[in-house]
Image 1 (cartoon, rainbow, N blue to C red):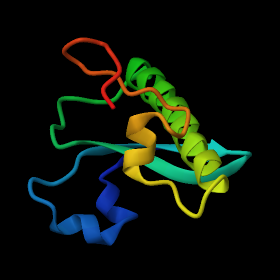
Image 2: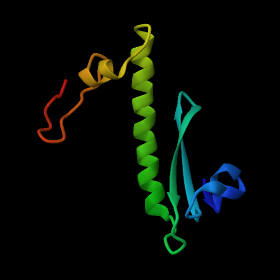
Image 3: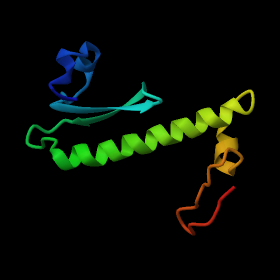
Image 4: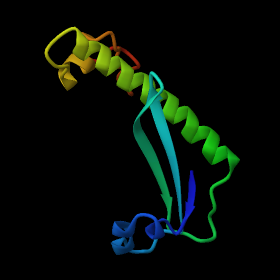
Length: 105
């Protein structure tokens, strides 16, 4: 969803300075249910979102949905998944160090 002057629909954003010119909202889904939304905001009226922005953010939303689903799957196997469980790979998630690319438990 693309919003121009998003404070019209979300009045609490009217307090943000500088004012928001555009907002690109990308929901993400797990099992057909919306579980979150990625917000991308522009404060510059000369910079408008385009099809490439939508493509990149849609890909990010797909990744976010997969990450959220993984967290839910991990939580199903125990009382609660913790950040440590996910980071260490105990939930089937491999964390890579940005410096080495190797597992970083």
